[in-house]
Length: 134
Image (tube, rainbow, N blue to C red; front, side):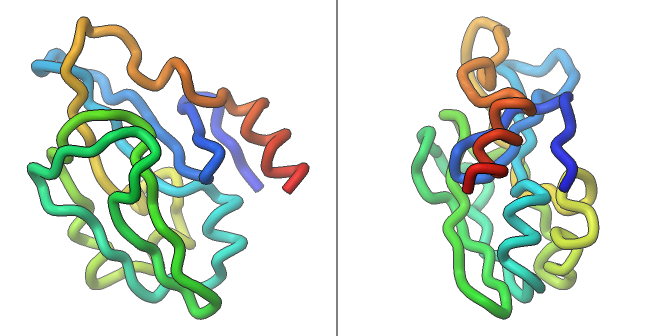
Protein backbone atom coordinates (compact mmCIF):
# COMPACT_ATOMS: atom_id res chain seq x y z
CA UNK A 1 0.00 0.00 0.00
CA UNK A 2 1.36 3.40 -0.93
CA UNK A 3 0.83 6.62 1.03
CA UNK A 4 2.44 9.59 -0.77
CA UNK A 5 4.00 12.26 1.47
CA UNK A 6 2.83 15.15 -0.75
CA UNK A 7 -0.79 15.14 0.48
CA UNK A 8 -2.90 14.95 3.63
CA UNK A 9 -5.42 12.30 4.66
CA UNK A 10 -8.71 11.84 6.52
CA UNK A 11 -9.69 9.10 8.93
CA UNK A 12 -12.37 8.14 6.36
CA UNK A 13 -9.61 7.27 3.83
CA UNK A 14 -9.75 10.29 1.54
CA UNK A 15 -6.66 12.17 0.41
CA UNK A 16 -6.43 15.91 -0.16
CA UNK A 17 -3.74 17.56 -2.28
CA UNK A 18 -3.32 21.33 -2.43
CA UNK A 19 -3.04 22.31 -6.11
CA UNK A 20 -0.47 24.88 -7.24
CA UNK A 21 -1.82 28.14 -8.62
CA UNK A 22 -2.75 31.70 -7.99
CA UNK A 23 -6.55 31.44 -8.22
CA UNK A 24 -8.98 33.03 -5.79
CA UNK A 25 -8.87 30.64 -2.85
CA UNK A 26 -6.97 27.40 -2.54
CA UNK A 27 -7.87 24.45 -4.76
CA UNK A 28 -7.77 21.02 -3.13
CA UNK A 29 -7.91 17.85 -5.25
CA UNK A 30 -9.61 14.93 -3.45
CA UNK A 31 -9.58 11.17 -3.95
CA UNK A 32 -9.66 7.94 -2.01
CA UNK A 33 -6.53 6.25 -0.74
CA UNK A 34 -4.81 3.14 -2.02
CA UNK A 35 -5.88 1.43 1.23
CA UNK A 36 -9.53 2.35 0.59
CA UNK A 37 -9.61 1.20 -3.03
CA UNK A 38 -7.90 -2.06 -2.03
CA UNK A 39 -10.45 -2.68 0.75
CA UNK A 40 -13.35 -1.92 -1.60
CA UNK A 41 -12.21 -4.21 -4.39
CA UNK A 42 -13.23 -3.67 -8.00
CA UNK A 43 -14.92 -0.25 -8.27
CA UNK A 44 -17.87 -0.35 -10.68
CA UNK A 45 -19.64 2.99 -10.15
CA UNK A 46 -18.85 6.47 -8.81
CA UNK A 47 -21.37 9.16 -7.88
CA UNK A 48 -19.81 12.62 -7.64
CA UNK A 49 -21.33 15.95 -6.58
CA UNK A 50 -22.35 18.60 -9.10
CA UNK A 51 -19.90 21.41 -9.78
CA UNK A 52 -21.03 24.35 -7.66
CA UNK A 53 -22.04 22.23 -4.66
CA UNK A 54 -21.02 23.72 -1.30
CA UNK A 55 -19.40 21.15 0.98
CA UNK A 56 -18.34 21.03 4.62
CA UNK A 57 -15.61 18.88 6.21
CA UNK A 58 -16.79 15.40 7.09
CA UNK A 59 -20.02 15.58 5.08
CA UNK A 60 -20.80 13.02 2.37
CA UNK A 61 -20.20 14.36 -1.14
CA UNK A 62 -20.65 11.19 -3.20
CA UNK A 63 -20.37 7.42 -3.30
CA UNK A 64 -18.04 4.76 -4.60
CA UNK A 65 -19.65 1.41 -5.39
CA UNK A 66 -17.62 -1.77 -5.70
CA UNK A 67 -18.47 -5.40 -6.20
CA UNK A 68 -18.34 -5.70 -2.38
CA UNK A 69 -20.12 -2.60 -1.05
CA UNK A 70 -21.07 1.06 -1.38
CA UNK A 71 -19.01 3.63 0.52
CA UNK A 72 -19.58 7.33 1.05
CA UNK A 73 -16.96 9.87 0.01
CA UNK A 74 -16.48 12.67 2.56
CA UNK A 75 -15.29 16.21 2.01
CA UNK A 76 -11.92 16.80 3.72
CA UNK A 77 -12.27 20.60 3.57
CA UNK A 78 -15.01 23.24 3.34
CA UNK A 79 -15.59 24.98 0.05
CA UNK A 80 -17.26 24.70 -3.34
CA UNK A 81 -16.82 21.81 -5.78
CA UNK A 82 -15.21 23.39 -8.84
CA UNK A 83 -14.37 20.21 -10.79
CA UNK A 84 -15.50 16.59 -10.87
CA UNK A 85 -13.54 13.87 -12.63
CA UNK A 86 -16.10 13.05 -15.34
CA UNK A 87 -13.78 10.39 -16.81
CA UNK A 88 -14.75 8.15 -13.88
CA UNK A 89 -18.33 7.93 -15.16
CA UNK A 90 -17.20 5.67 -18.00
CA UNK A 91 -14.11 4.22 -16.29
CA UNK A 92 -14.64 3.95 -12.50
CA UNK A 93 -11.95 1.26 -12.36
CA UNK A 94 -9.42 4.07 -12.87
CA UNK A 95 -9.65 4.58 -9.09
CA UNK A 96 -8.32 1.05 -8.55
CA UNK A 97 -5.55 1.47 -11.11
CA UNK A 98 -4.37 4.97 -10.12
CA UNK A 99 -5.97 6.23 -6.88
CA UNK A 100 -3.47 9.08 -6.43
CA UNK A 101 -3.37 10.21 -10.07
CA UNK A 102 -6.00 9.79 -12.77
CA UNK A 103 -8.43 8.35 -10.20
CA UNK A 104 -8.95 11.69 -8.41
CA UNK A 105 -12.60 12.50 -7.65
CA UNK A 106 -13.25 16.23 -7.21
CA UNK A 107 -11.56 19.58 -6.74
CA UNK A 108 -12.81 21.89 -4.00
CA UNK A 109 -12.03 25.60 -3.97
CA UNK A 110 -11.57 26.91 -0.45
CA UNK A 111 -12.04 30.61 0.26
CA UNK A 112 -9.58 32.05 2.70
CA UNK A 113 -6.29 33.70 3.38
CA UNK A 114 -4.16 31.56 1.10
CA UNK A 115 -2.99 29.25 3.87
CA UNK A 116 -3.07 25.46 3.55
CA UNK A 117 -6.66 24.31 4.23
CA UNK A 118 -5.44 20.70 4.51
CA UNK A 119 -3.09 21.47 7.42
CA UNK A 120 -5.38 19.97 10.06
CA UNK A 121 -5.63 16.62 8.26
CA UNK A 122 -3.42 13.59 8.90
CA UNK A 123 0.05 13.50 7.40
CA UNK A 124 1.21 10.37 5.55
CA UNK A 125 2.81 8.75 8.62
CA UNK A 126 -0.27 9.30 10.80
CA UNK A 127 -2.57 7.98 8.08
CA UNK A 128 -0.35 4.93 7.51
CA UNK A 129 -0.50 4.17 11.24
CA UNK A 130 -4.30 4.48 11.18
CA UNK A 131 -4.60 2.23 8.11
CA UNK A 132 -2.23 -0.36 9.60
CA UNK A 133 -4.22 -0.42 12.84
CA UNK A 134 -7.54 -0.83 11.03
